[in-house]
Length: 427
Ligand code: GLU
Image (tube, rainbow, N blue to C red):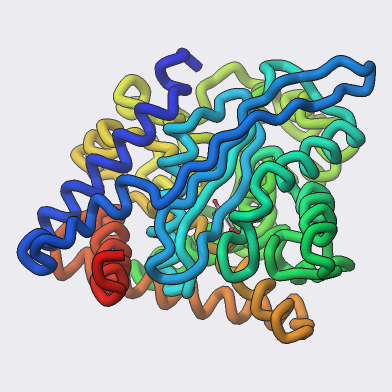
């Protein structure tokens, strides 16, 4: 990917353009005169930027840049994941934090938005002890800003339940608490919620199912390409394949693509990647390796579950799929989104489609606060109810304003945040 396409600046611009448009449509300046509501989402409440000196196993030190952006807490404590990646920059984390504020509002969770990131050196893989030290140092750098009533981190790209376990343990060294609702996405044995690991990917497909129900689409036998086979893409592909009868024909990750025009056996693909690593995905014995750009796949549904800016004005015209399902945050630039809509593509946008992860994070907080334990069945049933309600609400807003689903998500979420901000006064 070109440097410019990886830059968080483009992503932040896309989010801010939409926020300004939304403020105009909602006439926020008239409705909340003198209260500068939209600026309270565009300019984050707080940016914490700090250095982590990470001791490598060989004794050398990697000096890493770390961030936590607390975007807005008008509706509740800051909430959002922590990303470890070489492409992380402050603009990217700001954009992701703003999307978290909106995402929580779209699904009606009593939470605000935040995001964290650590810029990793390119091409370096940290050992488990190195990851543990990094997790603990991240908490050390932020500790006063964290807490179940302040800011609750969770996993995101390259972080997982193990990372949350180390972070939560480190946080407990300061507070004396053993299990806290101050982190979500924890392992089950440490107060994690059943269903959390798969919640984002499963939620993506639940949202698609609700879309199909509302628009009389039979998903059985439809073909799908999935870009990204991390936590979101793999669980989305698995549910599509195992529970919905969608034929997943193309799956790609940063190492390449595997294709089977009949259908890929996703259960076997998950096992293959688990046993052989992400770099083995293109060599999956049940598919053929392919050099193609997956966004061009000739399928019914394109599920984008990798990183932001995967689709720009340069490749949007090559998308053949009539339906774009956004598992990742910000996979289309603003320009690509405009062109895709012009070309008549149906889009289920990120802050609606991938809100299942933060929703089950919220369930995890509720269980922790009450020392409670819900079954996986119960978690997924509650998740489905929330996602279906959110989908229906967004359809209603899109209808009312005659706008796209993404615009409808922004309109609904910004009105909710605006209302709370206004009620709080000048903040
Ligand atoms: N990182 C996920 C997201 O982008 C989950 C955030 C959370 O659970 O707080 O939605």
